[in-house]
Image (tube, rainbow, N blue to C red; front, top):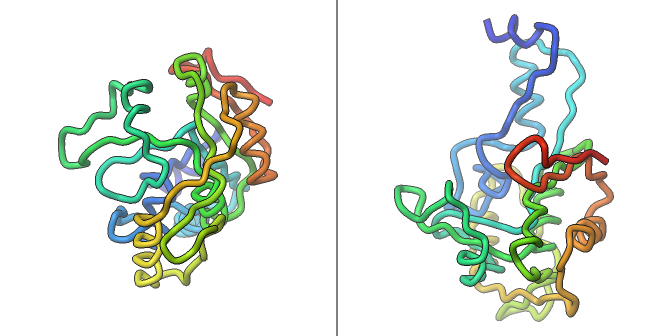
Length: 215
């Protein structure tokens, strides 16, 4: 039945259950979900139903980082929770405390590397600069064992000991911020371009389709 639905005329949208940094094999164990969020997982699911049509993969990210619960978030800034109120994200319930953080080039690089091949990016919450004076840009980390880390090592799929090592590293990481802050959507998109050459296909500036802009 699912295979027949997939072959109906039109576009089929497959959305991952969570962000890739919560992926069961690529995320920071044990603060992960029991699901895979990579492009390979989508391709494998399509193959199960003999779906042979071309598949495009897009990465979705917002202008700042958020996280529920106790997982690592090196750029967490308590003041952002007050400035960037999100009525649908709160700290009550099983998910745990909701936190916000400044954009982080180290986590972005890692996410792009473990996700798999992408056709482009969709960037949301770009209206943040109308509500918040500016955001900081994390270029690298310092840790007790290293003064400079700008890239996280990629482990072998299924090696949870490696993912635990990354969790421990991130919990001891101190963000090293760029001198210049980000006070506009254009500056943010320029920073993204310094991390990846993927094109930004859509930009969102609010909570309705009327605020989405193409290239």
